[in-house]
Amino acid sequence: MKKITGECLCGLIKYEITGRPFRVANCHCDDCRKVTGSAFATNIFYKENEVNVTSGELKLFEHKSDSGSLMTKRFCPNCGSQIFAENSNRPGVISVKVGSIDNANFVKPDVNLYTANALNFITIDKSTENFEKMAPIK
Ligand SMILES: [Zn+2]
Ligand SMILES: [Zn+2]
Image (cartoon, rainbow, N blue to C red):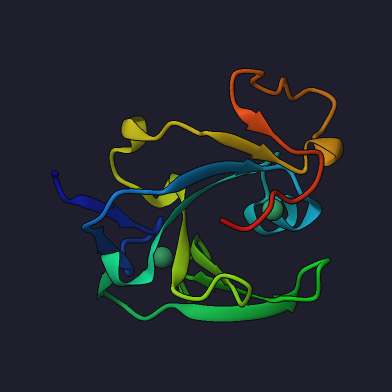
């Protein structure tokens, strides 16, 4: 499989992905909206060891999810682009924000999360697996 690359807006942070995503989730929760500054987040889940930062050093911000787990957001200290996130409930897993990937047209969301929180102008794709809140961890 071709190597996937990504970077932040200013180019300080660069990374490579060697594996395949095991889940692609559109998340409509309030946290994802706040942190991305957009209507929802598209989070692509990989095994942590398949994602390698090749340039720059990310800054992190930690907060609690509604289930009480520790969420870690990693972003560029220079331009603020959000790149990765982790959840203490899912050790060894990292999610990548779709907007940071260089050629992201291979990405196909397979699930929508927190559809109960989706903004009124969003149309939820009925062909994906959809959950009103969080999906069971897998
Ligand atoms: Zn940057
Ligand atoms: Zn979310």
